[in-house]
Image (cartoon, rainbow, N blue to C red; front, top):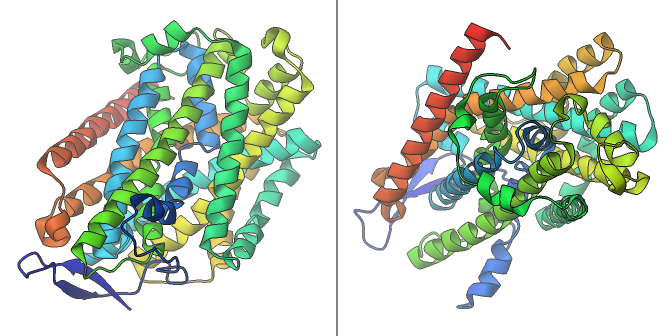
Amino acid sequence: MMAYTYNDNQPHGTLLTKGGTKSLAEVNGSIAVPKTNSFWRRLLAFFGPGALIAVGYMDPGNWVTSVQGGASYHYLLMSVVLISAVIGMLLQYLAGKLGIVTQQDLAQATAQRTNRVTRYFLWFITELALIATDIAEVVGGAIALNLLFGWPLILTVMMTAFDVILLLGLMKFGFRKIEALVMTLILTILFVCLYLVILSKPDLAGVFAGSIPQPEILSPQAYHGLASPLFLTAGIIGATVTPHNLYLHSSIVQTRQVDHSNRAEVRSAIKCMAWDSNLQLSLAFVVNALLLIVGAALFYGHADELASFKAMYLALQNNNLAGAIASPFLSTIFAVALLASGQNSTITGTLAGEIIMEGFLHFKMPMWVRRILTRGLALVPVILITMAYGGQEHQLDQLITGTQVFLSVVLPFSMAPLIYFTSSKKIMGPFVNRKGITIVAWICFVILSILNLWLVWQQCTQGF
């Protein structure tokens, strides 16, 4: 099996081979693309990977940071949700293009072009990010099961270790089936959030005003015991643009069959990938915006009373915080959407874990072993906190917020190689980034790095 890059010095985009195995070899090139001039038919064939990427933009970590952001600072952080979505669209486009053009995922491309020390360091950082993401999935799924069925929290936490059975079963039915299930769960989450917002009757003027960045966003000062705007900003960014999504996207776009000897076909594949990714991420942005709106419209001024998913559930069920719209039905659909979010993220997290380990370490293990290893590491802090605090959900929600901030801090370690590779004429040939895209991408990298350094400095000097 070979991966390829274009040599632009040769006519017609001659391909040069590079040693290496295909990313996610069991599904690589498994989906046929019609040989037609119809853009819409080709787009339909490419429609799907974007849904798996969008999942990472609406996982339980997003629920905590977005709802808390609205409840704490009204619509102030709406601009952060918007900017995070735009940055995410740019980075996912670059990741997808890297995978289509080079036939390597980001982990493979990084491993091939870095020395051993750097490669292992980046692998270690990325694995930590994946575990942090998995913690949010564990907590979200476990709490949802606890709310829906009343099972003990420690039991539902342990039950999340067996979700790999779902993915292993789906893999036997083909990658398209996985994409279809994920899309169904995404639509479930979208409709639930939209329903909640319609009932909450938000201040639309405030929503649009909050979409314009305000200086207060950068304040490291906590107000009335709440998380500071800067801390929640980092949490929203980390929950939205998760590092593992960049590796995942660069791999799963390769499930489509593309003739890499035909430059026009490669260009068409990139175009279809961009449409798929941006459409799906637009849905993810809407979900995150709706979550923040729900927090602002229903719970503003009561953030300290919404320290956990259970508190949100009870508020929607019969608490006077939600007012006249509170009902058991409302709280139930909230829990169902939360469960859908956790399961969706589990599917994509498992795939990303395989991509990261194989790409960086050239080491393959059975998917169920890989999943148990990652989930086992994620379960340790969740179980310890659950046992230490007697199943108090708000402690677990604080753990989620912390993991999302960590994801923001480590995101630049994945951004830098991605931007560098896609900006290299030697690697990308005729599909190298336009200068404007490269400049914007590096500006995003620098700004995010500065914000992270500022946040770390503030937290070290003031304490968490």
